[in-house]
Image 1 (cartoon, rainbow over the protein chains, first blue to last red):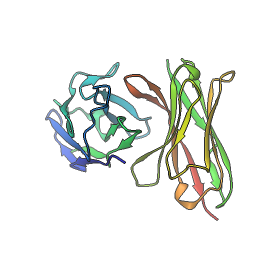
Image 2: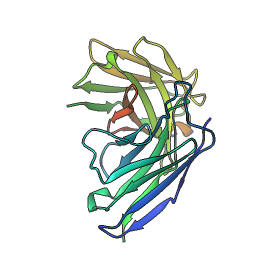
Image 3: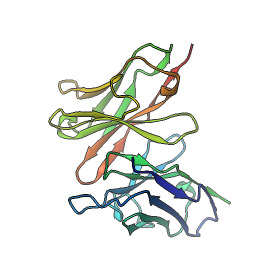
Length: 111
Length: 117
């Protein structure tokens, strides 16, 4: 199984300031079709999981442009340019190159 | 609007069975691949099973031979039949829609399964 490791596990941030979450996979996420199936999900309290980013850097429908994804191979990053109160929650990276596995989750909270 | 609503969770004794349902609206389940993902209390997310548009199904090793994923196209509903349940199957179970190449793009609220005597 591909193991996904996120850092940090907790990220206290000031409103309006940036936040960054890293995700590392135990092996390359480049699929045989040439695509890299790395996504980011958001889990807000009491809400369903929400897809934010797919294939490393593509924002899903309705996702604000303050969310961005980057990376390649085994190292990926989710950035929130200016954290808003509604961004509080747990963020997961997810790979779908070889079945599906998830990072442990990073809790974003307001300082 | 895409919506997924899970039901069927509850308390069951070890060795028992349960069938989860995921009612879909706003799209056709047979036109997308569909998955179940679970989250044990205080733990991370774990993929459980997938059913593809052609009907092929696959499951994680942890549930293989015990859980069966299926769908009813006439009811636009996804199912997870869970047999021989163990304490370690205790979790919130989520259904999710899959779209290529986006991936698991819409998720339900989840239904809690507790396996305990």
